[in-house]
Length: 138
Image 1 (tube, helix red, strand yellow):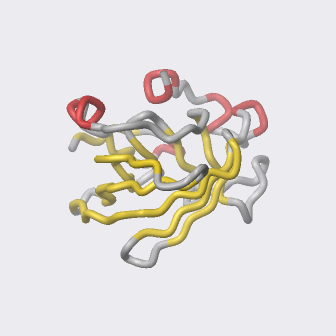
Image 2 (spheres, rainbow, N blue to C red):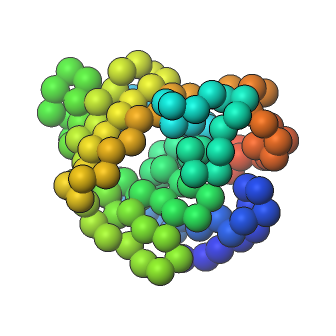
């Protein structure tokens, strides 16, 4: 894992390039900034903001890499993912409920629950509004 200065000046964990080739399937979600459902786009916090890429979810200091994605229902997916931070990763299986192309929730095998929706970059506070994330979401 490599680190670089990123969102809010904090270290951002870069996901290994090989992960993309290993990912099976893809969640039917638009890529970009996702903000926790109990926060607004304009008042998004570090802890509540993640970038969704083809590889997974990336917060300021942590991430979940999608290792395998399986559709198990019309809007339900089983995702084997490796989540972690600078101190390492832990495998988990999560059940993602896709509410629309811009909203989801999941619960993983470790009991972690998360729900978020896409926020337009122009509606985010600084520094997200001015950050170039094209390399993460293209």
